[in-house]
Length: 72
Image (cartoon, rainbow, N blue to C red; front, side, top):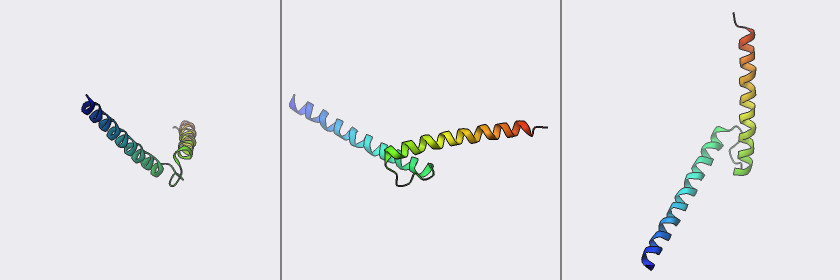
């Protein structure tokens, strides 16, 4: 029984390491996508990302309004 639980524990630990690595890779990708994101800690990066998304939404609304104004 002990060998079985030890193997399970090792698999869980391996999965956690793999999950952490996956999260780190995703954070690095996000840092490259978000202006000013490089070098930010994840908590600040997520706040910067939220601000960037709001900024992009605003740009979209402005461009949609302008396109309606200048439609032939």
